[in-house]
Each structure stands twice: as structure tokens, then as C-alpha cells.
Image (cartoon, rainbow, N blue to C red; front, side):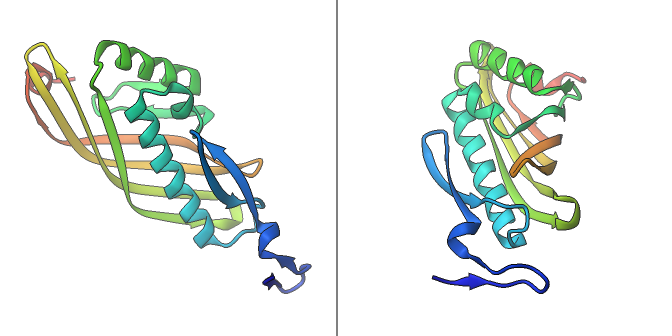
Length: 176
């Protein structure tokens, strides 16, 4: 068994650094303590983002909620400001009902950690698509997310989505 030792700290086995967590039916090994190495935190955030994408694809609002902090603030591509986990889950549930084929995917280009405060930034590309009465909508752009380690779990505190392209029906021609 590998042991990790940090100056001025007790040594700890690598097994003690990991916990088995079940997210959306998939078993994930995630850091069990805040002092886990940054690379592990980055990998965890990327896994959580992938799990969130899979939840959206399944229209699973519980999975969507799993990564959101209670007071999360989301600024959508059309500048709607949604505050709180419950409100964001409600908006997803509304979209899942009104747009049965809606899909969103966020692909992180970079995740940066600030370990002393247990915070991380995620910058990446996002895409969305659905069918409206007047045709297929495809929208894409850049996003930024702020993550925070809270009680041993990484949660999204804020997300901002900026559109860079939109093709399809009237949705793309309106000004928010």
C-alpha cells in the first residue's frame, strides 16, 4: 500500500484518500478529504461534469441537482438569472417537459484549483439542441463555472453561459 507523507502532517495511505461514491448509478472514486492533491480534485470535477451531462441527456433532475450548491447562481445564454438549486432544477424540469428532445453538454477545456480556499474554476464549451415548432435549434458557446469544496463535496456555486452561435428557428432570431 502506498503511503503519502506531507511535511508536518501524518502519513496517510492512498486508500484512505479515496471514497466510493455512487452518482447517477455509476461508482466513482473521489477524494475523501479536502487535502487530496489538486490533480485528484480536477479529475473529480471533470467526472462530476460528465455525470451532470449524462443526467441532462436522461432528463434526470435529481442528477442535475447533484452538483449544484443550494444557492447556485446560473446566468443562461439568454440572460435569465436563476438563483438556487430548486429554481434551476425547476427550469430544467420545465424544459424536459416542453422540449422532449432537449440536450445540453458542457465540455471543460480547463479546470483550475485554488486549494487554500477549496475553490475551482471551469472554463469550457457548451452546446444545446432541441426541436421547436419551426425547426431544430442548435446553440453553442463558452461557459464559466465556479466550484467550491463544501463538506468534502465539490459543488457548482455559479455558472455563466455565453452564446457564440445559434442556428434554426425563430428562437435564434429573437433578442433576449
